[in-house]
Image 1 (cartoon, rainbow, N blue to C red):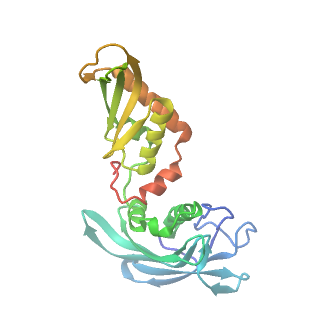
Image 2 (image 1 turned 120 degrees about the vertical axis):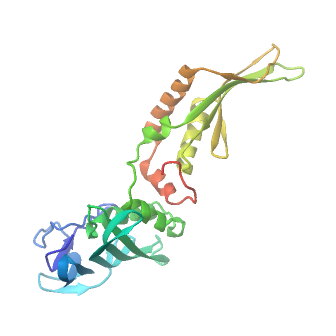
Image 3 (image 1 turned 30 degrees about the horizontal axis):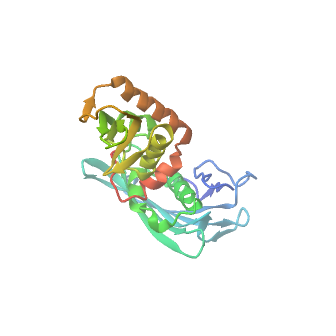
Amino acid sequence: MKIDRPFIYIKVGNKIGELTMNYGYNKEDNNIDSFGFKVETKSFDKGKFEQTLIPGKFLDKETFIESPLKIHFIQVLNIHQIKQDSFYDDRSYVDGFLKASLRIFNQDSETFKDVNLSIMNKGNSPLDFMNLSPLINFINKYIDKNKNIDKLNVEKLIDNSFGYRRPFELHTLITKIKIELFDDSRNRVGKDNYFWTEAILTNLDANTYFLDQVKNFFERIYRGCRIEDNTIIATIESDYGWVPSGTRTQLNNKELEEEIKIRLSLWLGQHFKYDEYRFKEFEDNTDNIRD
């Protein structure tokens, strides 16, 4: 979307994750910080244009000082909006780009990583500088958790921030889980034999935070579990008895499967932290099932 004014004023916010950038702020609003962008526009025929947003600080209504815009742990160095001749890329209609240069600092304020974004404008929803707010807010919250920027897969984060992605639903992750139940036993010479019911969970989301939360659930609510190759093997119940041990037998117990999922849903509803899941999603070198 083309900007029709020479300056843009933004609201940085005092707390992490409160950045808002849009067309609606006026310098006269006393709640708005004196930060923003000077807009330089090159217009061409057929509605094409290039706009450069130069960050800086307003000393007063007439005086603008160009300087990197510091938004907590991120410096915005520049933003470009480009409207050009359309073309097709991977069956998508493309008619422009949103570009930005960011410098992302760790909490020590000494080490940093420079990131250059170049996102194609696909479809009927034009990208502009406002689309950068959620991305900047997320990265700031990530660093605020005392996490190192070198662990963050920024390229993957950018791809998922500006591409098509289904809304995240914890319920979907749970309903997709497949559960198989088994009765098993172990013979113990001279002692009571050991009997247990085992649940094998597959089709799990590969996010390590999610797996750890499911593991915590079985350790707190049932008799423990272990993780093997993105599969959780849990002990649901166990006992000892002076009776003969038997062979491993698969159970057809839909009621118990449903009970496990319901209790898992209630547990995660209390303990699951969305931000932590997202942090791990763009930190792990894995392709999660939820693509």
